[in-house]
Amino acid sequence: RDTLLPLAPAAAIWIACGIVAAQVYTKKRWLLGGLVGVLIIGIPVHAALRIKEWYRVEYPYLTEARQILAKVSRPEDLVLVVTHEVAVPLYYVDRYGYGIEPGSWQPADLDAMIRRGVRFVLIPIEDNAKRLPDLFAAMASRGTRLKTSPGYCLYRIEGSTSRVARQL
Image (cartoon, rainbow, N blue to C red):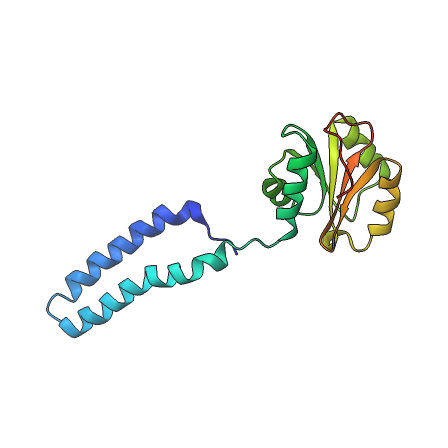
């Protein structure tokens, strides 16, 4: 999952050092040199075959949520995400906002976030399975449900100044 891209330049230097050392060591050993050449070529080939897996979206519902938010909100509207991984959903829906922990939130936490300017609430179903009825009850008086799918629920906070949101 984690590709550790910040370490890529250091890894490239170590790989280059290894290639130079292998060339020096195998200069007179052509069979060993051929084997080392196959191994060296195998590194980028392996990476090319695996890269799609490394960058696959783990939460496919976020693509749909992004499209809906693009239709019904402004780019500056804040989104509250009820999940452990706050940065991931906010990144994929291309919005700024806040997050609260699924297991420890209270209705007062929702109110505090609304006072901070939150206009939309994104609730991933998987992260909130234990407290989903509580969340739905808390959101019933605070917002309008825009979308429900197997992956998530999206609410618009009542009284927000966003574009008029319609049921999707």
